[in-house]
Amino acid sequence: MILDILKGFLVGICASAPIGPIAIFVIQKSLSEGHKAGFITGLGATLVDTLFAIIAIFALAFVESFMDTHQTLILLVGGAIVLLLGLSMTFSDPFRKMQESDASPYSVRDFLKAVAMGITNPGAILVIFALFAFFGIELQPNQFQVMPVILAVAAGSASYWFSFSWLLSHLSRKFQLSTMIWINRICGIFVMIIGIVLMAQGLLKIIFL
Image (cartoon, rainbow, N blue to C red; front, side, top):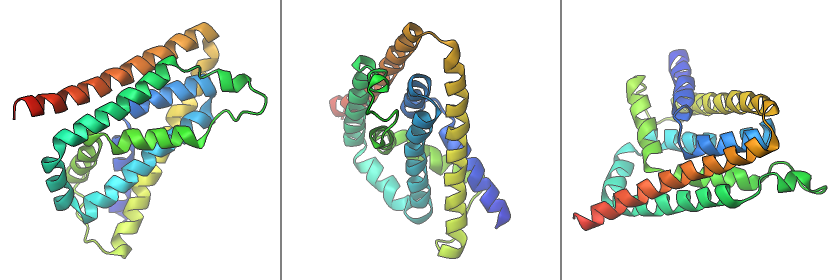
């Protein structure tokens, strides 16, 4: 059991490590608004990874069938959501609310945006499945065995985003405001490109059915 918990912790770290739309979003928030904003955004990814870990244990066969059946729709909807979030990142002013006296430097909105990015990313759940297989985690779906591993996945993911956002927030002190604005825009453009690619994959499936 202890070995499975350790493996679950590693799954959480490895699932968070790839650079995707959520990671870019966390980079933006950490650099522009600080450690807490970046970490809270990363916790959105932690929630998604934890949900996917639960699905990987209890409903793998069902989810694989659902994704095969509705893959085109998932790509189109997910790509559109990621594209819209990328547009918001590119053209919004992340420093405006930092200058407002009654504004919080971070909000639940960023957390929910990260959750939306993760839920609508068809590749994210496949990464969790692959990591469970790679680390050889095979659990019977009963509460005694499953809960510690699920909590370990969440802890691993949260630890990664805490460290990642802390490092970026400290690096941000070396940048000027104008540089930060351009980094923010570049991050938004990368997220937009990811969204466009996902939508293009969905459209190609429709065209070549």
